[in-house]
Amino acid sequence: MSYPKNSFFKPIFALLKKDLLLEWRQKHTLYGVLLYVGGTVFLINMMAGQPGPEVWNVLFWLTQLFVTVNAIAKSFLQESPARFRYYYTIVKPSTFIIAKLIYSTLLMLGITLLTLLLFQVLLGFPLAQPGLFVGISLVGGFSLSILYTFLSAISARAHQNAALMAILGFPLAAPLLSILSKLAIVAISPVYTTGWQSLLGILLALDVLIMLLSILLFPFLWEE
Image (cartoon, rainbow, N blue to C red; front, side):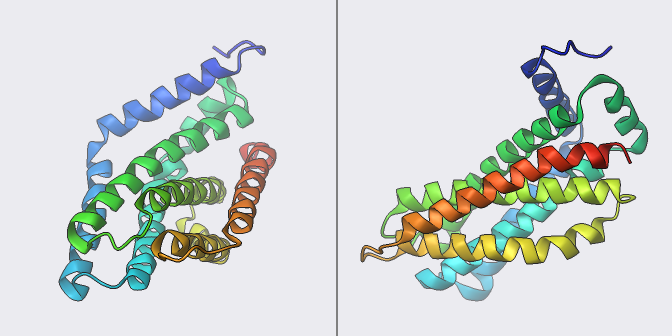
């Protein structure tokens, strides 16, 4: 049964509920991601101890990148073609991709906070402005989640080709990580740094562009 045309939020909440239930039933997948995060930070601690602020910053964002790929990649790749055909009969493609973007963002924000906690416990917290770094980390988690949700959608519609996401992801994630790393330096350095507002504006503009592309282009992928 399809939803009424004037209903916008109801199908989004229904899809979010569906993803939460699937995550709960397949807890081993989530546990695998959490184990990956914990194992990665533990190995960094074994090999590097408690690194200096700049190395700490680089390691954090690299960890965020690989965690995002592992956590968000399954967003679309776990959906079977038969299930996609069923979704096609009950919701609009724009509604479906918005629900996926929201769910991936919520999941990544939670994982980002967990990663920060593990880094603080095992690798120290060499930050001049911890609150600012937490805010930048959450913005970074949001940026990476929407990017890889979109790439996951493309990969899923390209015959479940996960390699395509890796190929497309690197050149697109590199500028995001570069901006995030430079923004994070502001929170690490005890000296006030000018110009970070412009970098934040560029990052948010890129996020808006990715979301618009996702909403506008996904209907064409949906019909394939």
